[in-house]
Length: 240
Ligand SMILES: [Zn+2]
Image (cartoon, rainbow, N blue to C red; front, side):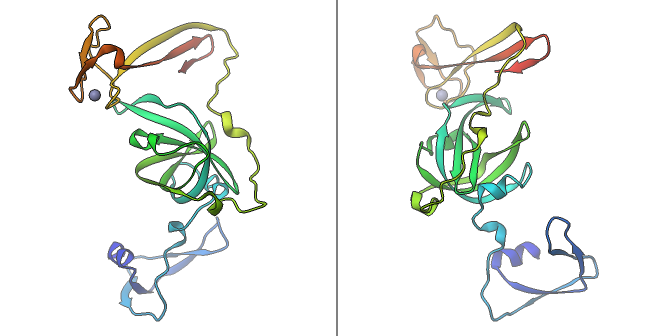
């Protein structure tokens, strides 16, 4: 019943609820229990979407904490890292890190798979349905299956005289090794140039290779090379 009324934007009247103060804000939350009665009613004002379906700002997103839904953000791409691949759920996924800026601040967004081609440096977009993450304690964003990216005009985001302050987290992906490396394990992956999937049984001595996933036969030299591995030092191992 809740989801039906939410979907239809129907007004309801609740009786027998309790109000509890919300420690995170000056408001209170309404608690329903088994005594609560919900009736569908008519009201003489239009349906207004809840605040969380409206535009959000980087400043507020950074306060959300990890694994929170970000409904809508309008921001300019101020830095793009080269795409890389990572192994997630046993498949090679292409990711691209980009840095988004709006008038309130700057945040990193990790784009997954087909979304990596959708953003370009210095362009401004509306991003819908992202998730927050924390990378070494720094708030970041990640795309999800439902993420939508639409180009918009920059003037919508930056109004005159509202240059954002540049924050220090542009290069948070750079890791400084301060102890001497004692060993490295490097793995070389070959990726299909079309479907970007990791190849099994790739033989560099053979001229032709058939993609494990999309089954297209193409020259071995056209497959992409991706290195990953671990650098070991006396103190820790670090994934590269
Ligand atoms: Zn393929």
